[in-house]
Length: 516
Image 1 (cartoon, rainbow, N blue to C red):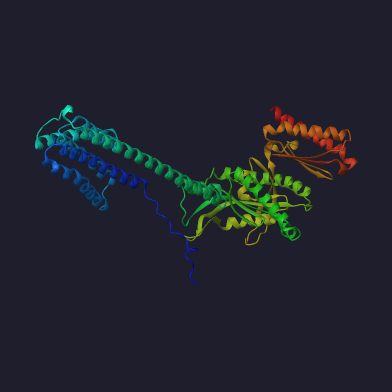
Image 2: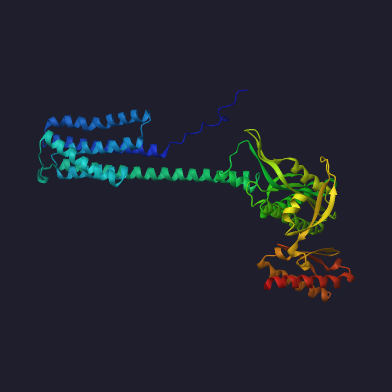
């Protein structure tokens, strides 16, 4: 069936180059310039103050613009520079206007009108230098005209009123036309700017959307020109991180789809935010599994990369306790924990794929080992390889777990289980995470922002006071590094004393940090 003409898309109108449109309008002004000179000459001939033989000059004044524009158009088609051609024409205009002034016997008002027209056109066309050169060429044209036609001066008293009026009207028409040209040029510029702004806005919006499919490091290196979107790889020493949620697959069959989607998106968003804070490159999400690597496209050195990776893993494990409390209040009772495996080694990193579809990722035996360590890790723990441990052992505590046998490796693999930063090993009150009936608290003092510390202290003090007086209270307070949930109706009486003691220690830790 043939589609109707009404449903066919309208052909897109080609947007013209603003400079071409502006130059075309300037050409019309040039024609008007010589038309004014020609009309003034005709008025002088009619009033018998100019010889009839000057009709030859009239023919030159009318023919020159047409010939000049034809020559300019031909040169432009031969890839000549339009700007240079236009500047040459402006100087030729001055010569012929000088000749026209000589043919008008240098009558005051007509010559002043022509001088204003030609020099205004020169200034708007090329600026100060073109204008100064225009004066020189105008004088030269007047001298040549005087030598050819004879040097005569028509006195103001002998100048016919018609000649003066025609010149002034011509000047007025020129001013109006030039003003209209300026208005049109400004309107064209404004329209072009609006179109460019809209295109930039669309490009920014598209870039923002596409950026979500790439890690910030890759996005930044592509836009800065440091990296090209082509198939290329290299060998490099990286630290690789794998994690997944233990029991998530089984739980996903029980939860409603919207709850599962919200839960997974929250988890991946928070883990990505932590990874970005430590400078990790998020490679991919595979369901609930997360793959991150450190050392490319930017690196702080193998030791610092490995330390940042393990520090990220420690924070993720701590943050998972906060997420469990939040999910529990939403009715998700499963105790979800993440397993993490980390390894350091040489891998192949870069763009894999084809010219039409690329995937920036890493490949190699050490990548597989990191994945195997994640599978071997206990829920809620971080398992690292010996290579990673050698790089981080000065700053992070890790317990030797002996050798394990992993799939795909013929030799036993020495592994270590991460505890925490050495500097935080004795600061037990800096991190608290506890759950009980009607009560949950999560606190990482180092993550609490300065402007949140006073509200946190106030929340702890108010809650403890009401619990002490056995007043009913329900609290759900969250801030960066802190979360508190209390429902006094569900608290067990025997737990209230312990809870108040715990909140007191938490308040002291926050207060000590606040003073510092």
